[in-house]
Image (cartoon, rainbow over all chains, first blue to last red; front, side):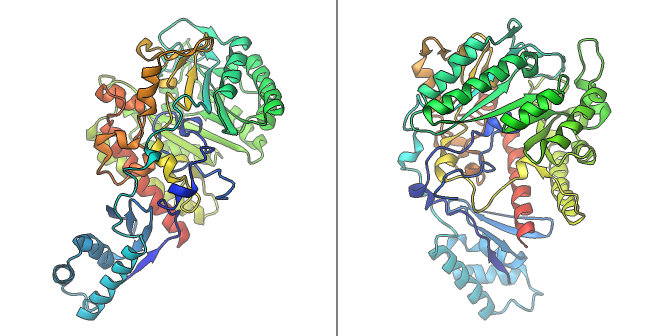
Length: 48
Length: 456
């Protein structure tokens, strides 16, 4: 019986460590219609 | 809240509030579904009933499995409750802060695509090109209202921006001058239909433009059905060689070939693969934005077929990865470890606050989709935002202001969705465009599966 936990960003932790606002607005990429923020990479120097 | 699903042989659990993801098998997936109420005895009985012929279904094995689930819950990776609903992150701290502009450098176009959301580029007004002076003011406005944000974004949009190419280049040069004076960093992007694309444009883009979006709908008969010039001539034969030359010279920098699909090509996967086979490896494909009475409009009856297209796209991408001819698809690009923080996911798309659209005459709108609708004009560059209460409405339009999103597992992926789509579908910017939600959730399931498959 398999459960493999993937490495993902801890969203609750990012409540205190995140919020710099430097990431790209989703409509400035290749979409302009469907929104969606999850594919915008984090641009915070601390994160990267 | 957890979301569990099976796709392409993967059994996946998403723990919504933590963002944790678990690759399961049918038994552990069922256990996660059943154990959400925390009742061990009931879960064990139900599992044994669901898998009567499974030799692994012993009392001890089930107990171990439920211990693992208890452990994941204790780690905050399963069955997590909502820690965000009372957070200050829910409200934008500064509604007047702007970090991104969509500059409509041309309300004019050299094509007459029949499905154009912008009324063939005129946005229901007069044809116009943005004077340099208006663009100059726009960049200054952006810097002045950007607070302590360092990364600023300017998208050259239209209509067709290359109709005003000299102004675009001059604005980029002015932006670089502002960078030197202020320490801000401008990220310029450009969308084009490609009709005027040449080596001079390409070389400039390679030096200065972070991302270029090239509009192509796919197969020749699909592309040319809509994307004709004013004499009714299709544009495929003109733009495809230009796009191929552009991409060959792009040198690995960002670009997307972006298409629109409609009711006429519900088999849009064929168009995506056609674009991949033309040599393009960064693709995007969007459902058409149009009114429900349009013959091009998609409807809920189309959803099962569209879902199949998205699923098959994900499978095909995995197959092509193995063959060494993989490609990126915009909506399937997920970085599980370095994706956006919860602030971004709560904040919403930013339209009307941190993201504004500017018309050739300098009027300000919440985004390109609202341009031309006078009810949504926010102000102009000379006076700034004058309709402060309207801006406040957009500033408050964060994820948690969307009642219908409360129980949705995908809410932190879409942040409440497109305000314009919501408004046109429901009359309220915090409504939900349900058709768009269905497509979005399917895309996210595929994107997560793809990310999981690549990890394995």
